[in-house]
Image 1 (cartoon, rainbow, N blue to C red):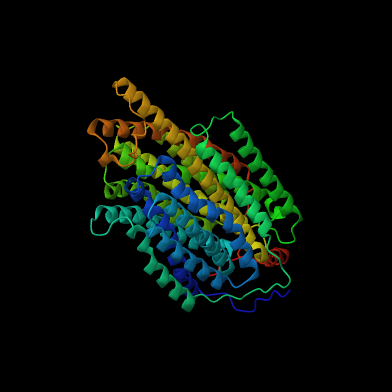
Image 2 (cartoon, rainbow, N blue to C red):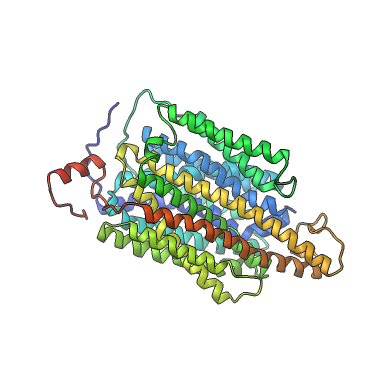
Length: 525
């Protein structure tokens, strides 16, 4: 095994040039998710899908991204990072094309699952490459740029998705096609600007068995969450079989990982206090943020009657919070070298935002809803990327890929679980509300509206349309209450983290040498 890095550190300009390609790649991946947030009610309505299928269009991407993230991270520790980023972009583009060509919800879910493999690569590899170029102390400033791009993608995505589905000569399929040219530009920019030293390691095996067991185990549990209470009872043989199977598969995954020479989720890194607590916090933040935000677009369109474009505009406070807080806090972290206070504050603000949203119904003031969304955005901007940075600061450069992807894995896992659980809760609540409203009105009809999807409002009678709007609007607050409770776990984990100064060197060993010689540590410009 050889591990030599003889190149001089990159200048600020070189870093920005390489970062431009990375951020373009991350931008196109994030837009693929956010562009669907406002368009999905129309997409599922056009395909005559159900609330469960609505959830799984999102969950499928998150699930495959979650399952492949640790594999991408491990590959980044072994092979050329630049090539891996480009491969993940190509996979993402193919998934986008297949999604746009889907003829029914089943095909759309399958295409989105394939697209998620590329998303998993991008969400892991962008962080890994940045960590290989920039020291943790300086990374706070660049994380501000990262957060800014995330905010722009998250703001622009819903707006673009709304405009596309509201434009008759485009149609919802262009929500998936529109990202393709941006991805091609990202490939070209990366080819010209990204130049990293490849650390070659011989005779290394990737633990595909462990990754497969994790993916299948999580999938089984998520499928159970989606259908329990509807297709079968909580206390039934189906529940017992699926829960037992999922837990056994995950237990086997832990056993395999503990014995693998190159585990995709390194248990020795996971056992470290900073990493363990960051994982718990990321899991909670991911469950709360992804799970809650996915249903905001649906709340504005189905529950409040706004168009997709209007729904995109109404989510701007959430994204503005992410943009402002990530940039400001990134600069503060670089100047002070401290990270824990900002993570703690971010998780507390996140809980406050979700607690406020838990009180909404289909008549709540939009000013109040906007204020609550702003709090959630600020909380996410202060905590999400900085949890990855806290872990990167505590591991050597050779383990950056595995450590970064492990945190991203659990954050994505949290988002997957959050979307599935909250989607299942919302579906049950909506069905119950519609059934009660129909009974009160003396209408004896199925809550699902017969063969017509509840999400296809234009195909429903006026009276039924009002009942469905009220049902969705009133049920949404309930899932935000669950998000607030989940986010409290993130606060506890953040409080338990040890305070630590961010190192000003790329590698942990170099940082220790600097400390041993008592040389002052400065921030390179």
